Amino acid sequence: MDTHAFEAELKRDGYDVMTNTTPGAKVNPEHSHPFDVRAMVIKGAMTLNRDGGSHTYRPGEVFTMPRGCLHYESYGAEGAVVLLGRKF
Image (cartoon, rainbow, N blue to C red; front, side, top):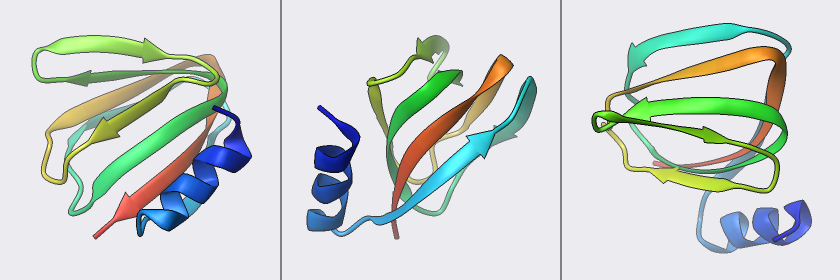
């Protein structure tokens, strides 16, 4: 799926849409969000750690996460750009 189609899908399904840019290496400590997440990595890579597992997402890959899900994220030296949908 391309970014335009993904963004249109997010809007159709009632998500607020934004782009999140992480310019370099970073770890966001464990946290949760008060909203559902549906996101697509556009550039770089990010690793999402949750539910006892870890997965690295690369450009074109999509992930979802329900509100309240405890997780942490990490980014390599190249950082990442993520097209992010939030639904409260």
